[in-house]
Image (tube, rainbow, N blue to C red; front, side, top):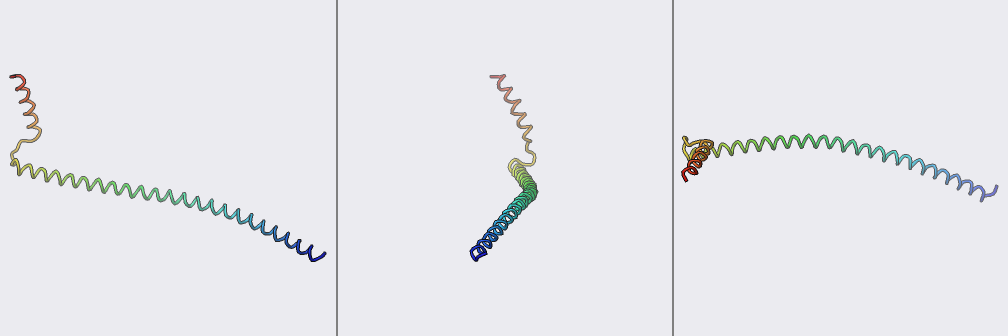
Amino acid sequence: MGALTDDMTRLRGEVDAWRSARGDFIKDLKSSITSMLADFSNARSEMAVALRSARMDFIQNLKSSVASIRSEMAADLAGAHRVWFGSFAPRAEKTSQKRKSGSKGKKGKG
């Protein structure tokens, strides 16, 4: 065989080797991508669980803070009410009942 035949035989062998290497590379790439997507999915799931837990803790702390603020505000309002009206001021329920009964009497007289 001549030099041209030997070179073409070698070239054909290299082309086959590169084609085989490219096929192996594509298979490895697909496998890596599949593995990476699975890892992303697992990470997303773990992150969702952690974020939900953090969100629930935040909401619980927020509810506690708001309840504390409301309690302090109610105490402040009660104190202001005692200072303004004195400690023997009628309760709101009794006052509203007096208003209802007083308004009925006025209608009957008019």
